[in-house]
Image (cartoon, rainbow, N blue to C red; front, side, top):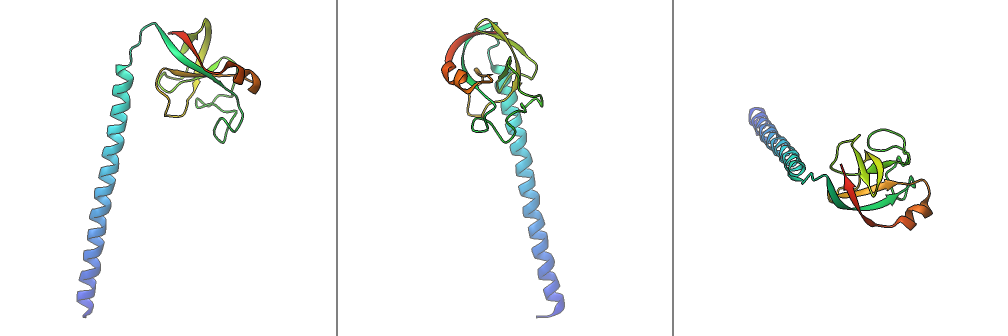
Length: 139
């Protein structure tokens, strides 16, 4: 095989590789856009009635219950009593759950539905005693 033929083959393979890479990048960008659009549509379609029954659990800063930074919430603040985790409301949103005010500062695992809340508590025993409750939420 001549040098010229070898170069043509190498260039052809490189071009095919670049086309495949470009197609993959385009697909990934489209997937991200669709995911973002789906999240926005879901958030916009959530009923924002002023009162709603929600499921409320409790968590602590124990590494077994959180990620690798158990004392830092998703908002970047240090954990504190009065903070609550929720996946759909913006950080800083003040909610009243069961007659007590909380501030949305953290996020939960994405498998939880929008109207599930996780109240921060300092004591593990207290959080276990809390369990899961259905309480009234007001925005």
